[in-house]
Image (cartoon, rainbow, N blue to C red; front, side):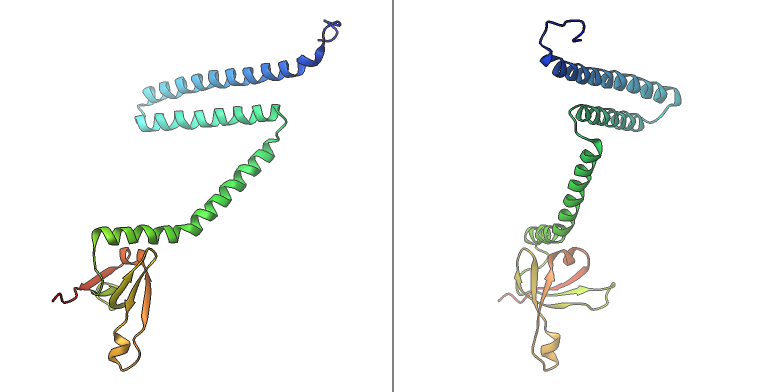
Amino acid sequence: MKDLFPGLDASWIGPLTLGVQIVLIIFLAVLLRALVHRLIFRLGEVRKLPLELVIAGRRTSTFLIFGSAVLLILERFGVSSMVFWSAITGFVTVAAVAFFAAWSVLSNIFCAALIYITRPFRLHDRIEILENGDKAGLGGEVLDINPIYTTLQETSAADAGGQPSRLKVPNSLFFQRIIRVRPCDEA
């Protein structure tokens, strides 16, 4: 360009070239998406494919085409696709670990809300969590229900002459096992 127009200031040529490249990438991505969508639609009609499969194919192709276009545009700005890919996978990994770590706590809080709403048992009821069918498991009197645990006063140790113990049972366990409820005597 400098040879064709020697008297012009060439500081605008770099940004102009970058802009033209970006517009061209976007135009080609939109054109390719339209062609692939038309091909998938016709293939679906000819082969009598289910509509769900055609829609899934169109969405997948759109994601891949525009994902590739974004990577090409970022490369034009000097961002390496490997650096971008490393950042994305690192973020997804950290998010997955954080979600997994918080899952048990969130599950217990959600189950506590369900216990408050559905009221499968109340304070001072005697409950028993059955292991397999009618095989005895944990049991005792309900002393407290909080967002994470339900506290039970175990009675089997007191019946044997020992000190009764308190069990803190995660709320999610009540939705994974069968529970036997003996309501407290209301006077």
